[in-house]
Amino acid sequence: MTASVGRQLWRAPVRDISIEGLSLVLDQPVEPGAVLPVELPNRRWNCCHLKLLRVVHATPQPDNRWLVGSTFVRALSEDEFQALVG
Image (cartoon, rainbow, N blue to C red; front, side, top):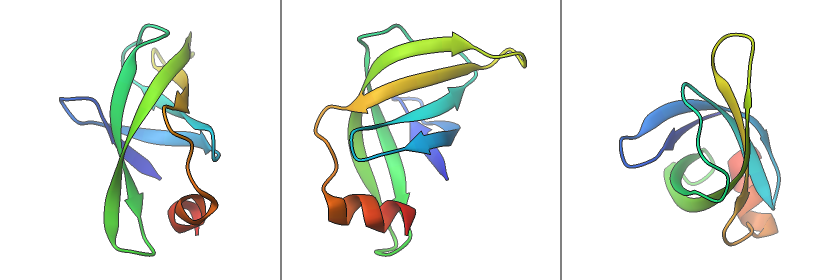
């Protein structure tokens, strides 16, 4: 899954997703505590969900990218989660 992140809509691969949060791989670090808008594709409903993420950490990766772990400001419902990963 690829997400669109931030006001400039960076394309970012999603490394991991759960009901409570997700991790993304970004080309630049983001400060812990920052809130990012993210658009997540929903294949079941053929649309995108706009969600807000609160950054927990940004960990440098060997390829000069950053693994950014975050929590959803409002956790996903089970239906939303299944529609995203289904």
